[in-house]
Length: 133
Image (cartoon, rainbow, N blue to C red; front, side):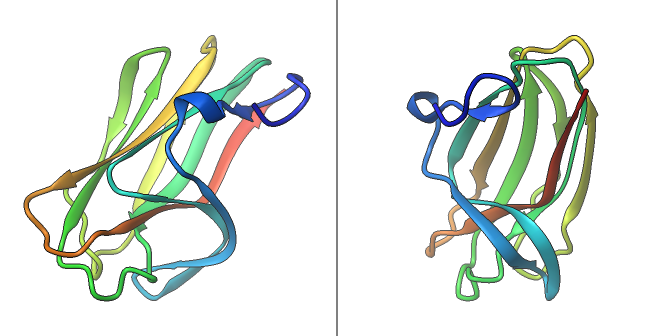
């Protein structure tokens, strides 16, 4: 676990590989920050304090230039799915994510492969923000 338990923290033993990035790109649009994962993946975040929302722009990362696969993004809180994207490929614009987290204790960001792409895809959650008090 990263942090001092006073705010949102990545649960490393419950999560896939995560790359925290600055200046990532989705469909030729740059985002100031975010996280990148390899599809499929699951990233668990303990909130550790009252939080009100999670927002991001989700899509196939620009580093996956040669991928022919598609992915689907989902956001879960305390085991309940709150949001799910449609299938997204390399040239698709990022999907806007905005989910309420009031009263929740944990968030899980999930990326699933859709179909049978021959090349792996990197998936990014651009400008990802968890708003807390």
